[in-house]
Image 1 (cartoon, rainbow, N blue to C red):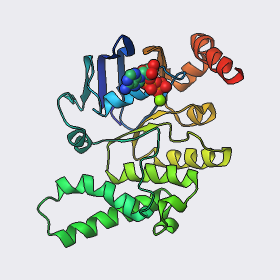
Image 2: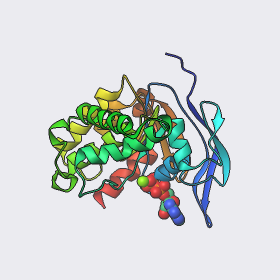
Image 3: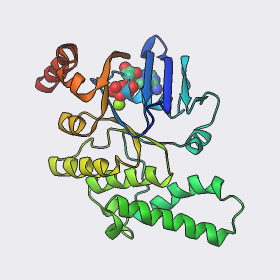
Image 4: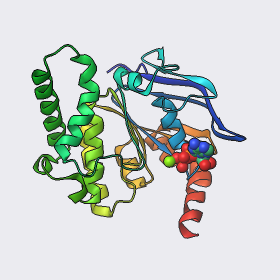
Length: 255
Ligand SMILES: Nc1ncnc2c1ncn2[C@@H]1O[C@H](COP(=O)(O)OP(=O)(O)O)[C@@H](O)[C@H]1O
Ligand SMILES: [Mg+2]
C-alpha cells in the first residue's frame, strides 16, 4: 500500500464572521487508514469535514483530493470524485425502508456512471448495490423495514450503509456513534472495523475506546488549530494532548 496521501489540505482556514472555526490546518489522509479527529466541542471538527466534502468553501487554503483541488466543484461533483460523508445528525428518510434509502444514495453515484444505460438495467444495478451495502452493514434482514421503525443504533448503521452506497474512496463520518448506548457503540465500532481493509476513513468520534481501537492516526484539534497529529500510540501517550484535550474533556464531563 502506497503511503502517498489521497487527500491533503494546506493552511485550511474557515471564518464565520469574527470566529475562526478552522485555522490554518495542514492535514492529510493516507490510503486505507482510519484517521480520527478528536477535540472538544467547538474545536472545528465538523467544520473541517464540511470543508473536506466541499459543503462549505474555505476562507483560505486548499483541499487536494488525489492531487486535484476540490475548490469550485459542487458537492455532487466532489461526491463523484469519491468523497462520501455522513452528518452528525441523521439524514435518512424515515418513511422509506432501508433498501429504498440505500437505493437513493446509490442512484447519486450510479446516475453519472451509468448515465446512458437503459433505465431497467440501471434500476437493477442500483438495487444490487443497495443490497450489497445492507449486507456489509448487517442490515439485510431490515431491508424492507421503514427506517423510522428501527432502533437509533440501526438508523446510524443505515447512515453508514448509505455513504457506502455512493461507492466512496474516502469516507468522512461525523460522530457515527453519537447518542448511542454502550452496546450500540460496540456494534458500530465492529462494523467500522470490518470496513477497514476496504475503505479509507476520516472519523470524528468522542468515544475514546472506539477511537483508540479503530484509528491508525489521530489529529487532535483545539480552537480550530491542530494541537497534535500522529500515530494513535503517539497521541495516546502525548502529555500535550492529555493536558489540553483530555483535561478539558474531563472538566466538561464533570461540569
Ligand atoms: N455555520 C456556522 N455559522 C457560524 N458559526 C459556526 C458555523 N458552523 C460552526 N460554527 C462555529 O464554529 C466553531 C466550530 O464548530 P464545529 O466545527 O461544529 O465544532 P465541533 O464539530 O468540533 O464541535 C464553533 O464555535 C461553532 O459555533
Ligand atoms: Mg461537530
